[in-house]
Length: 310
Image 1 (tube, helix red, strand yellow):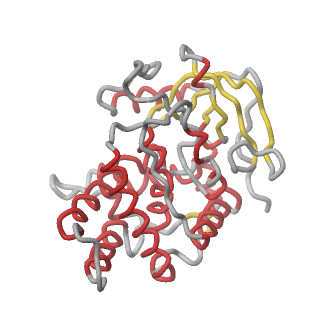
Image 2 (cartoon, rainbow, N blue to C red):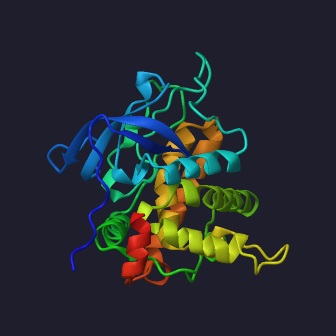
């Protein structure tokens, strides 16, 4: 049986588009099929040029189908739910940055995969004074990202949850690995716990909004009910998503950090510190690749595939 065809969108179609943790009304301006010869960002497959309603034209961007939802009553209800769950959320448009303040930042894909590794400097419009976070992504991890993308989006497979080791355990082991080096960074004992706490917090806050392919959302809803919202949970029994997900989704987050930093108010020293420890984390993941990453993703059921298309 052939894999289900993902939803397609037409030029001038009214849609909902993920931008950060929220969904916004948008219109499809153009439709293109990207391959190695014409990709704008390094990502492949169908892409859509969209315009957010009420936003300046400078926010127009190319997005993959994983960023878009059909304009239906169900998805509109989801949009309202996300707005209600996000404190201070802007219902229609983001705040414009004033001159001398934070530089304009144009997000492209809310999830960064190996298909989008060539994005780099394109995330900036005019950003010479803002610190840039450059990661040294090893080739072996680029391959992991490609395989991850293909397993989920092409083969309709899923990472087995909960993962062992999970994100929390991976970061704990990483800290022990750094401190156990013959010559660890001079500030590691005091700085690294703060870095790890920040990475864990950012993972827990971004997993549902930025780190999932659309095909994974029903699985996320299930694990979130099991860990956070289920009626079987007593007060204080809730667990974070960093205790359910593992290296696959942690890697997705790490390669998206330069985008996050570009839209933040972090100073140069903090960016340099984060960059150095994330690059070390990538080295750790390479050295322990066999123990951290799932060798074979699980096949999804036909029932799950039907739910994911709903």
